[in-house]
Image 1 (tube, rainbow, N blue to C red):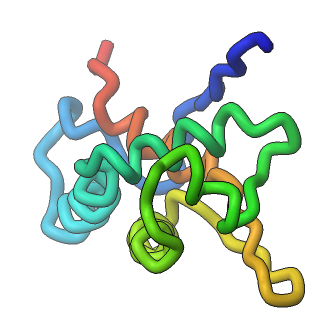
Image 2: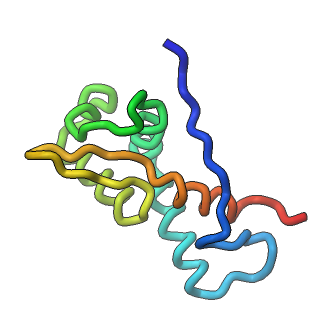
Length: 116
């Protein structure tokens, strides 16, 4: 099976490049929240699983096997990613299906792009 790679395009909606000019405190807090959510191996693996999902979404129950973590632990990590705006959950009955918020990822990526 071929590995799918997520394509993320930077946007001008949220966060300016931190290399362009000094950030104000609001911009710095917004960026820090996103980067802190990324600073965990389990959460990075969650994002990679979502990026590789053929339908672009994964049921919360489908993370247990690949991550070798309990469902409550996975829910904790998904909550952090959701609060940072990196994933979006859609409740269907008793399960929640998650997908990437590609715009938010693009904002974080864009903040690290060199200027010029």
